Amino acid sequence: MNQNNIKIKFLIILAFLVNFQTTIFSEIMLLSECKNLNDSFIKNEYILDFEKSLMIRNYIYDKKTYKKHRITDLSIKKENTLEKFFYEDGSLIFTDKVGYPQFYTQLVFEKNKPIINIKTVINNEESFSKISTCSKVEVFEKES
Image (cartoon, rainbow, N blue to C red; front, side, top):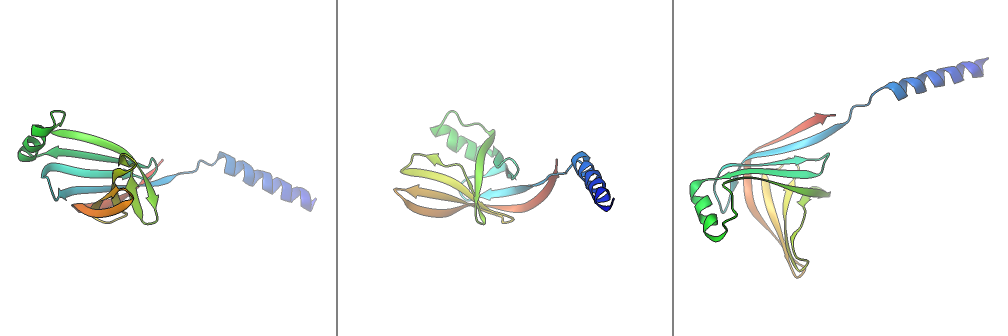
């Protein structure tokens, strides 16, 4: 009889766990008011969604920077959104590689840090350079 009580309790707990909806938490890191070392923007922000491994960059060039880039590339838009996948390697976050195998670049972030670097690789020689500093870094827990 004691063994039957244990089985019944186990089944009740199992039924409870199966019917209980679990809540999944993920993080979103928002870097806003980012000042670029080469260009100036009206708006420049980065959103890193850790659940989707997706970086979204929203930016609006100021007039001077827009004109500078428009001279050499007619496809430049004054206001744009870019999406890139990213992966984590230790404490660093790397976007997808852009370029060829012998030459490529990646954006590099650190969790909760305001500095954005660019990693440049030419013939297996790596270089890291600071490209932007953000005034605000916020981390949000997202429930789904």
